[in-house]
Length: 88
Image (cartoon, rainbow, N blue to C red; front, side, top):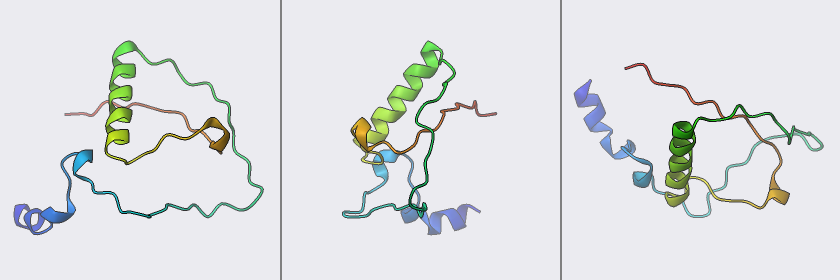
């Protein structure tokens, strides 16, 4: 298994900062015209440690250019955030 992983090391990233963005790449979803999504939701409140973790991950994704901020007028849909604890 180690040999297989090593042979694909150039395809794997250890952190988001190692993911290189592709200039002019656009992710498009095939959503039929006129489809509407919910724009209001009831997010379960996050505890202070959860909020700190989430905000740090969002900041990390913004810095790595994995996500980009948008104006609220551009928002088409929202989704709830569910944090799950890894079983070690």
